[in-house]
Amino acid sequence: MAKMWAGRTDGMTEQIADDFNSSIHFDSRMYRQDITGSMAHAAMLAAKSIITNEDADQLIAGLEQILHDLDSGALEFDMTCEDIHMFVEQVLTQRIGDVGKKLHTARSRNDQVALDIRMYLRSQIDEISQLVTDLIRAVTEKAEAYKASIMPGYTHLQRAQPITYGHHLMAYAMMLLRDRERLADCRKRMNLSPIGCCALAGTTYDTDRYLEAERLGFDGICRNSLDGVSDRDFCVELMSALSVLMMHLSRFSEEIILWSSWEFKFVELSDAYTTGSSIMPQKKNPDMAELVRGKTGRVYGDLMALLTTLKGLPLAYNKDMQEDKEAVFDAVDTVQMCLKVFTGMVATMTANEANMKRAAQKGFINATDLADYLVKKGMPFRSAYKISGSLVALCIRENTVLEELPLQTYQTYSDLFDADLYEHIDLVTCVEKRISEGGTSTASVAAQIEWVKTQI
Ligand code: ARG
Image (tube, rainbow, N blue to C red; front, side):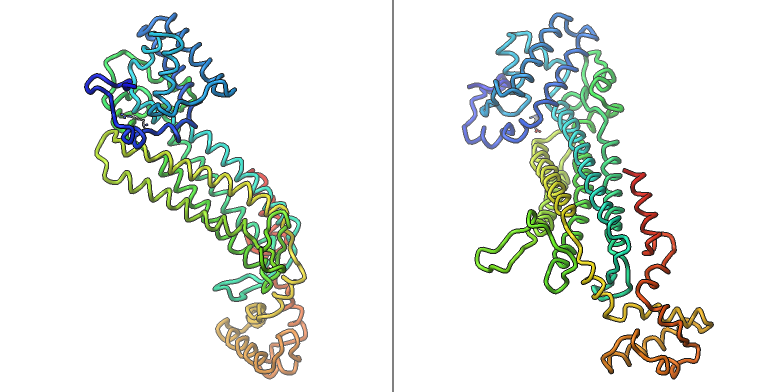
């Protein structure tokens, strides 16, 4: 069949060229945005007397019916159409006749597609933000349950200082809150209407871009028509916010994978979120966490793909830009799936508090507190640090721990040592003393939890 744009050419393209050119198999998911955009356009054309009210009524009723039929499944996409915009216009014209051909007055597919993507992605941002909020809630609930459970805190993956599991979990709640903010920020810049920019230069018709923007829930309009049709910054920004979000999920996944190993045994994943091995009967694999970690690379890839596509494009629209959609759709789909699985996994994960505590008891995790003890009794920190280090070395030589060294031994290193040192280096004391704002004491973790609750 000859193309809707036949005229300059005969429109009789090769099948392989059609297949290569067409985007309907991925842009059909924007049908709702395409149709509501067209309804607002028809209303604006009538309001500005560019078409009659009767024409607009017919166009809008026809569009409404198409939307209804697509929703119900009564109408199927025609995969021989080039894209969703052509499909809707074709069905409309088949159904209501020549009036259908008036819809495309004072617009182009270039501003139309830009409009559709912005509307589609802003609704995806709303869904993703909700999923992030659900995850923050799940993480915060766990943190509340384990706010006094002691575990080793690490630097360089070496035991560093004792912390609580609740404190560790709340670090992720903070990251996720920033992710939500980044999404909201991106949505703000995305929510400007490009419709009315037309092909690239605007139009000779006396249109009202503000009217259309307002009807479609935009906060304003793109102020330069060339920019309006060639801007895909909002896709890049969204994918970069999603990449940071995935990076957070991936770090969390990595810890869950480590923690659920026999070597750590800090957490146990629910059977509902693990898999077995087809050959090794003892296995309980953290596949969900591994897949989230793996899919992070995929979302970064989507971001890099679009950045690379855009980097050499002259103004304004170029067909290269059709490549934006598969990348950004893949990113939003992947992130939504990951968030849903991750929230379920975290909500059903249990901690092995005894093992965490045991791990914290080894590794001289209270050596800093031992040094602080001497400092509080008047010794300069550097000297105290040295004595504490020598005592650790002694413990290693004698295969013992700081808690079990006799007081006499301590006193050969400094006469500032007294019996109260044992209480001072007790893990619970070490944690509960860290009362500085944002620190690991139970009170501080409780304050973090309360604050996060006010944010969600
Ligand atoms: N399918 C196209 C895209 O996704 C729509 C815009 C086409 N515009 C054009 N002048 N060929 O970018």
